Image (cartoon, rainbow, N blue to C red; front, side, top):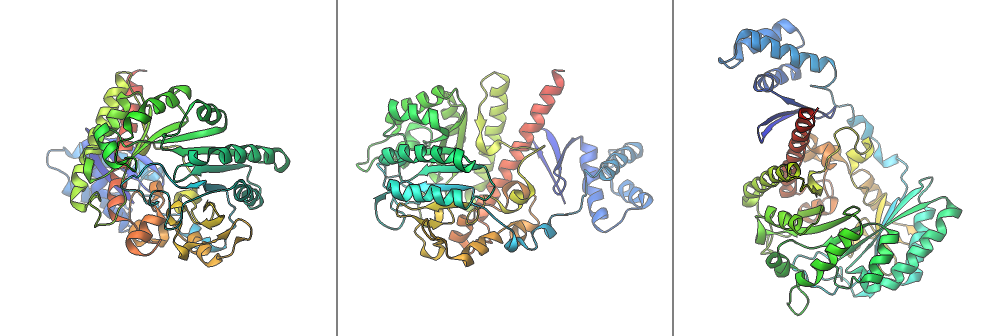
Length: 466
């Protein structure tokens, strides 16, 4: 399977099954287009291919140029870098029987929040239920459950989440200390992370977080008017002026690494590239701004008609990022970060985040759900931290959630990059975890194209500097 696209002056050819990416000139780009259907029909004879491409090639190319480009394309095929077969589908035939271990927990340390964000899927922290703070005892049992169900895996991840986790900060501190006490006797290593809106951040919290948290996610939507419209306090006043200086302090105290400012864009700011660039202008080097996921009746929901505008924004952002990089003002945008040489293992590429199997969410009272977005939906209650997984049918359903279980993914060029997308979004829009959120897919495909274009431009710059 081949995916071809043009972006910012680059002709890019992707061989999906091998992961090979080629930046080519116009004639090779056209030859790939002509040769791919021949290969798919099983035609391998060079004379037949030669006759076909010479007869169909653009008249502006000479026959010599056409044949030279054809030879280049066929050589890439021989090297296993073009028109490669899909060898992965059989790999997932029996995912249901695979042994899985739990490697990560999202601890809902607080089902409460001091903001009233308009788009909050957690209903201002309540998650379809009641306000509650996790006790140390429940959190302790959650960490014990993680250790007991992690098999031989050494590195374990725990995200302190909410609501707003700093509203239950003392328990966060106690659980980190407890987790550290488990590392040596059980041969484990915890990687703790914190997701916060910043309202309660102070020097004491920051000092502890910088010592113990591998990553901090700081929630802000961008420009003051955008942020304050969507992320106000319960009384309606904005949060921007309070949190920005705190977040800047966090970023500098962590040497501009191991954190993200993380925002959500909505129909209220379809020009979201301005918000990304605003955050960069504030000095942040690690930025993530993502599209809102909302029902069609929500006034801020992204609609299908908005997709062309949003794709253009991603293109604009990518070009501006390259410009700033050359000027020494570069920054990272999470959704343009892509590893073309290594990346995740095959199982992760096929099945994604591991929700419901390797990754679980824990409520303040110890219930287990496939991830934070399923919390409160009783159908997806998996068990609890005392008894473990009792709803094995739901777990097995998530085990079988992969790119080959989704019809929309089977022929999508992005499937090995997005791993089939978010199961929660699929369920919320289609009632099945084996479908896909169509608007999200369109935007994801565009982000991948932009990310690869940036890689091409960076490689060209590096080559020119040699």
